[in-house]
Image 1 (tube, rainbow, N blue to C red):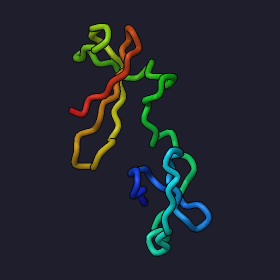
Image 2 (cartoon, rainbow, N blue to C red):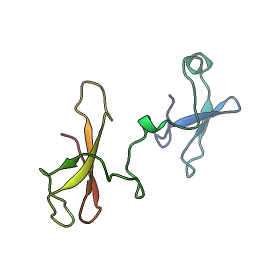
Image 3 (cartoon, one colour):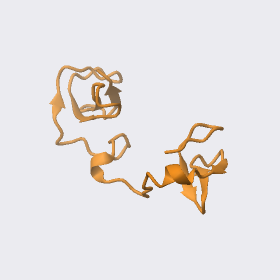
Length: 109
């Protein structure tokens, strides 16, 4: 994976060059062909790789936590999902959605 030197965003391979994925930046760089041979670029992710953080994502039916307090409404119950967002030796991230008001937050325990 290659990152943009100007803005730090990920870059993608396009016509033999690396192009910044940040539309506001538009920076390009030479593609390291030796490095590129070690990786595969894909356009999409499987459902297992996605983190539910979007407004329309369904948390309903997920496990429920009653040891949390919503920062928006003070309700003490939320649905949650757990994802490993960092290195394997770091604790997983819990993503919450308040059962009362729908506010979303994360906890990095």
